[in-house]
Image (cartoon, rainbow, N blue to C red; front, side, top):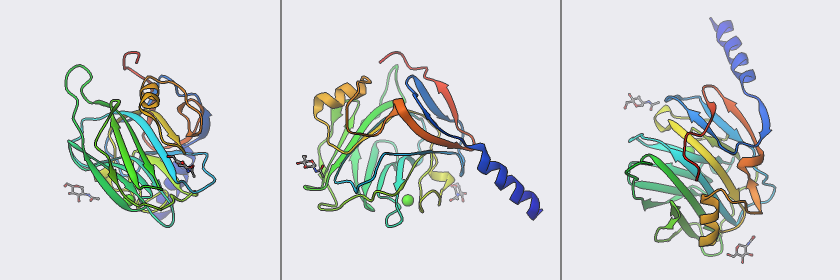
Length: 228
Ligand SMILES: *[C@@H]1O[C@H](CO)[C@@H](O)[C@H](O)[C@H]1NC(C)=O
Ligand SMILES: *[C@@H]1O[C@H](CO)[C@@H](O)[C@H](O)[C@H]1NC(C)=O
Ligand SMILES: [Ca+2]
């Protein structure tokens, strides 16, 4: 029995493949709740971060809590975390602290799909959250802090240790696409550009040259969204 389990673990370890790919027009589908399925992204991050912006587009109809973007270092498991505690709220964690924004939920033809950009500036601690291109009133946290450089970046699960400590009840079920990260803040016109798939420099993470590794049940599919 133990031998079989070990063998299954070995197989699971080989199921993911590291690749660098242009994922334009593609999505990661997380088809069902799981304590294991996730994607590890490899950011180009050598220095601690004092300015950071993360943008992504996601489709999800969960009403429980779930993780959208989890960056964990040895020092702080929630060094950068975008977390949906419940409908109508979105939390940004920096260095283990959080601010929670009240977010409008989408209705109508594109119900369930949201584009978000979250940014944080160490010098002021100011955190911004943009939902479908509109800025929410700003908040502040972790003034003077630096986000660590050697972390693990995961989609689909919330990390409590780098690369692990997942909780099935915080797993993501749905689709994620257009994931980008910069070591700068974005002006309003830049956020609009990104939402419409424009390209900006200073990328730490680029959906069009993405280094990633999928683990367990995650499927890459062409996007079904209309051209945006
Ligand atoms: C962070 O951004 C501010 C502008 O918001 C800039 O003045 C500062 O030099 C940046 N710091 C780093 C380390 O990039
Ligand atoms: C997940 O939630 C279910 C239902 O609330 C609960 O029974 C279960 O113990 C939870 N699992 C974990 C790992 O927290
Ligand atoms: Ca955590």
